[in-house]
Image (cartoon, rainbow, N blue to C red; front, side, top):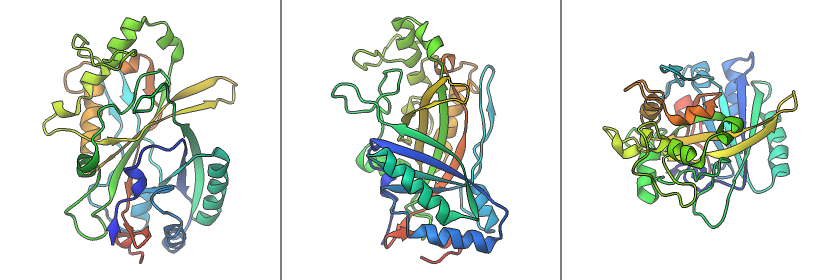
Length: 307
């Protein structure tokens, strides 16, 4: 039985790690062996796997609709492209467990794939809200599709065995400037987001630059729904400064919804930049293909790897 990696549809965990790998100098055979070892480790729930285009191309394979995240330049701001070969999303409740698991998986993937960098994330919850919050305090993922709607927008269907049940995964690590954010009045903050912090109500009088208006999924033609599973991150730089923001994570049946939203945020359609850029910017931009599961293992038949 073929099915979606369950973690793509499940609520975000208390703790998570995004572990990015790059290709080492290896043969296609060594890479295929590493992925065969990974197949049995990925349960799709506690561990979600996303394959990058360069990995797929190294195996001389093709995944319909998979391409690299484009670099997009708007009138004022830009969204970078930072390709990676593989991303493993480790999901759990305890950080030490995820660190130990990272070490095990990296040893299993060597020497074909080498760990490039890690982003540790967590849930930020205030009160009894249904959704987690960004570290600015605003709720994240308020209008996420649910149930059958979530499956329809996040899971590829109708393409055939090995492809059906897969998802296309867009990741961006956003860095917040809390000095700039803190200088804004509460009124200005609410109008930048398009919702009131106090009750999460959408503001009818928010400007066209408000993030909610820029990304209203139903306002596109066709509608641009995707399933967001973003989480806050925090780290200390080598210089000892505090760095934090949001790991934007979205799953789709293609990358189309993400790209049209990103283009509008940058003002490529009408010249209006998303107010979010006033206090935050994307540091990375990566696309991955999350294969389906079959009989408890990753279904990698499109890479000519048997289940």
